[in-house]
Amino acid sequence: MGRLNRIGRGLMLAPVAAFGALSAMAQDAGVEDLEARIAALEGGASAYVDNSYLFLIGGLIVMFMAAGFCCLEAGLVRSKNAAMQSMKNVALFSVAGLMFWLVGYNMAYPGATIANGLFGIPDFIWKGAEDIEVGYAAHSDWFFQMVFVATAASIVSGTVAERVKLWPFLAFTAVLTAFIYPIVASWEWGGGYLDSEWAFSDFAGSTLVHSTGGWAALIGAIIIGPRLGKYSPDGRVNPMPGSNIPLAALGTFILWFGWFGFNGASQLAAGTFDDINAVAKIFANTNMAAVGGVLAAMILTGLLYGGKTDATMAFNGAIGGLVSITAEPLAPSMGGAVLIGAVGGVLVVLTVPLLDKLKIDDVVGAIPAHLVCGIWGTIIVAASYGNNITPNEAGDPSYVGQLVGVILTGVFVSVASLVVWLALKATVGVRVGDEDQMEGLDKTEVGLEAYPEFAS
Image 1 (cartoon, rainbow, N blue to C red):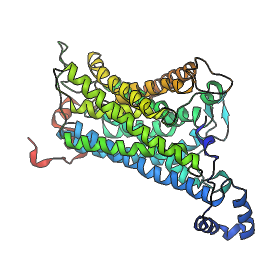
Image 2: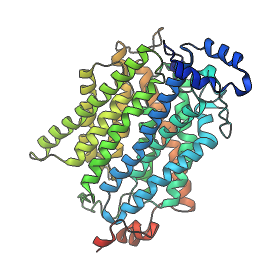
Image 3: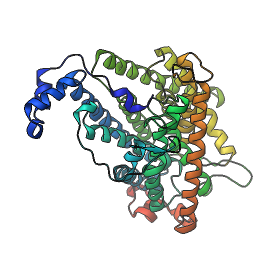
Image 4: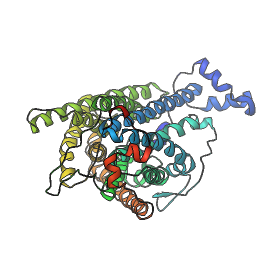
């Protein structure tokens, strides 16, 4: 079901205070006209206010995830690159906001489409006219949708850390947030091709957000290449431990917290008893999926590595579990959510060494947690709707429909990302030199060290 199609549910009761707040909008339309429009809304003024608050509060919580990514990445890179990583996270959020306003939103939610819903007809600069009939404040919706696109860009940031140039990375971020991510989002949340033709379902973005960022990160890691000294000619993997594990742990907790807004507010309505009960269940399932991811990753690393549990695997196990449940956090039971998250934690642990064998250098483990777990979480959605093999007349998700969405997203994002990365490589270059890597990007790209007292 398209993301915006779920909003048409209002609250059963309309508090006087909420009605009065909305009635203040009657300056131009006239009190009687506005009251008639409010009365026509399902759930009245309170539904409008509650739905808008859900977007705003959920958006604030998801925006805080940017801080989580920043802490996690700054903690998992070496100390000589921590300032650069912090700068990238602040900058990418700013670029994402600007590009989503200029182009992205109108691409994700187009007024008209071409090619059977594959592409929206481009429009520029989001206008944002308020219209109470839609059931929520237009600016609250824009803000909530915008913070999602920054998440996709953050995934790329962590993977290509410690060897990518700042401005070329931000140029890629601009294209990702203006065109690549919005086109993918339009296929489901904008009522486009996947929604209309395949009954594809991705509640809060296991594929549309996380796998999109993961595919872009994977292509970037391949084009830019591994960090200097990461892989020896004889095939050995040289560990490059992070500079601040407690900071990475803090980032993990912030992301865990942010996911309640990410998934919970994706219910897109809080105006009925059913809606608020759904939000509550989503919170619970989201939490339990992270629990399953952490514990599964810890147990498996203990079994594989002689009884020692890897803290970074546990952190990414949490994120892998959260990504896994994001495609459908409402339908499963809490026990089901634990199992879905646990599989995500296992996939993280198994994928990290696989990438090293392929000499694909993912500094923070974003590809296993976001791409691989995003695929798993998307496919398993069909299990919550009767294990349908193909789309049925009821429009329930199916394994084939979910797989089509995964494949189409992977092909499109990979090809588009490849074109952009190669274009940047051929023009301005994307990789810093060997000497800059040895000295650290804090000095060479930012001009400010994160830990000057401890510089060697």
